[in-house]
Length: 352
View 1: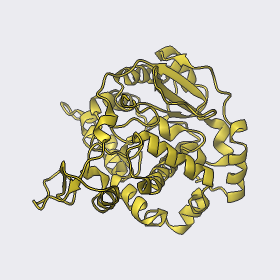
View 2 (view 1 turned 135 degrees about the horizontal axis):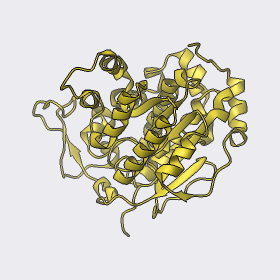
View 3 (view 1 turned 60 degrees about the vertical axis):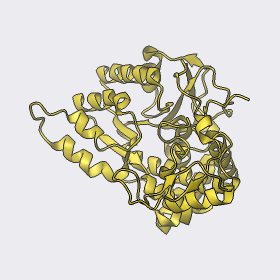
View 4 (view 1 turned 30 degrees about the vertical axis):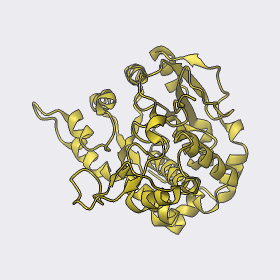
C-alpha cells in the first residue's frame, strides 16, 4: 500500500480547519452497544477512547465491535496496549495455523505491555482472531518515551520523520495544552520542571499511534486507546494526513460524574458511562521521596534496581531521579493516558 506523505502547508491548513473537517459533535449520550456500533460505522477511521480500567466500558465496546463485524465490516484493530516493537511477534502468531489446545488470544496478550489488565482486552483479541482482522501494535515503548522525555524527539524520530509529522515545528498552543493535560492527569502533583518532558513523551506517543494506523486508513481501522490520545485538538488526529481528516471519528468514553471539563471540540462523540469503583489514584501521587536501592535489579522490576522509599526528597531531586531511572520505577506515575493509574483527562480528584 502506498504510504501517504503530507507537506507542512497541508498540515497547517488542516490544523486551521480541523473543526470544519471534524464530524459535528453530538450531544453527550449514555453508552450502549447499539449506539456505539452505529458510531463505529459512521466513518472508516475510528479513534475509540477509554478509561483503561473501566470494565463496563470494555464490555460494551466489545459488544459494539462484535455487532459491526457481524454486519460485515473488517477494519484493522490497533492497540495502544502493544508496543510497536511487538508487531513482528504478533504477525507470527496470526500467521500460524491454529493448533488444538493452544489459546492464541493468551499468546497475543503475553506480548502486550506491562501494567494492563489483559482480561479486559481479551475479547477484542478473540474477535480479531475470529474475523481474521489485522492486529496493529501501535504504541511507543516506555523506554523510547523516556528517551524522548530526556533527549527530545530526535532520540527516536529521524529528521525526515520529524518534519513529516510536524514534530520539528509544533504549535505552541498544542505544547501548552499537552502540558496542562499532563499536569491534570497527574493530579497537579508532578514537579513543574517535569511537565515539558512528559508532555513531549505524550506527543511522541500520539505521533507513533498515528504512524501505526496510517497504512490502514484506506481499509478502515479502529484504534483502541485512552481518551487523551483521541482528542482532535492535541492527540492522534493532529498527526494524521490532512486529506484523511474527514474520514476520522473521535469517540470518548467518559465516566458520568467526572469533574474534569472536556475542551470544546475535543471529541466528535462523547458517551457517558458508569464510574468504575477504584481507590482515588491521586492519593498515590502525593509527594514521596525516592532513594536508590543498591540491591541488584529484580527481573521485571526495571533496569536500575532502584526503588521508591518513604523518605524526604525535594522536587528537583525527584525530577532528576525520574528522568535518570525512568518513571516505571515509581508506580503509579504513568505517562498521561498510559496504564491503570491516573486516567487520562478524567482523573478522579482527591478530596479537599
